[in-house]
Length: 427
Image (cartoon, rainbow, N blue to C red):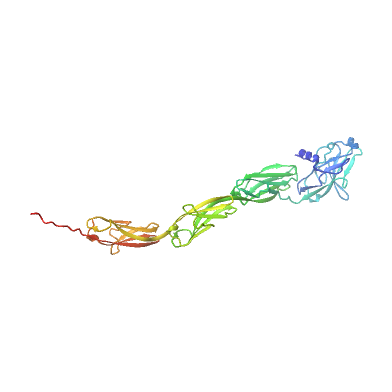
């Protein structure tokens, strides 16, 4: 990792102090976390006349600028200075890349590099002639950067989305880690990769309506003296066609004739369903066309019974749902008829037929003139009397009954006596 970083720095990403002779290449500013390390990418150069004096035994030093300047690091004793750490490569490679460990905010300030070699090769790369580096020690790590990649904060169901989380690498020898979580799933696995200066994790997935208004959180954990975590969250907005469309009846329970009822259509959609259209059994729009989430029927009667359909629609699609409306009512139009019709002759069978319009279906009970139950009790829509005689004459009552009420009807049964004709005998 360090070799990669040093190579990167040598390619020209640093600020050059002067154009020729003695010069340094290093950043204007580096940031560090309190309790962690700071990494200073650095290369230097010398006048060509001193090349022979530069050996690997040359001391590479760092000073904190001030009045007077203070030596903080010496490559010959890297663990004894005010700043302890490691300087990389060799002097003959002209490498001054350095790592200082366990920095704190007392180390804020400007620093410059000094080279001390054999003979007269001793040179301080101080400003303003040469670039100095400012070390800024942060008391706590910044939040990670979380973005939709590309800008996809509003996406359509079924499409692919990428979330990118990144955090700065302050100390390459102790890089941070990135983890994902969401309000939908506690742990989400991202695809991490690392550049020279930052750690990146991409989260790629295909969105569904279940991801709408889901909060995605990226947590950065920095390995300093004590683990320090920071978080950043983003809310995902997903657009989708209507789902979970349903129709309910209000008030719930039985729908009674004459009492107003409202059919309510609900749908989960984003953007919310903008059009609701109502249909009847034929699946043709009601006449007149009924729209809106509510369909109110005032003073319902049996003709309103049937299946009602609601279609919810937004710009991404449609979805239907239906409900069966069952208007219930007490018996009405109860009537009695005699079969066969016409005169009822003694000795013949006759059937009395009771019919009634009701919902739910009725129970039928039969009575005689006294309005007492027949003995034995007779129920059902038909009352058959076999082998009639004169005693069967009279008024018969049928009572139609359901849980909403009763209604009676009656018929007069007149059994007529059979007359026999006597013919005189032949003599």
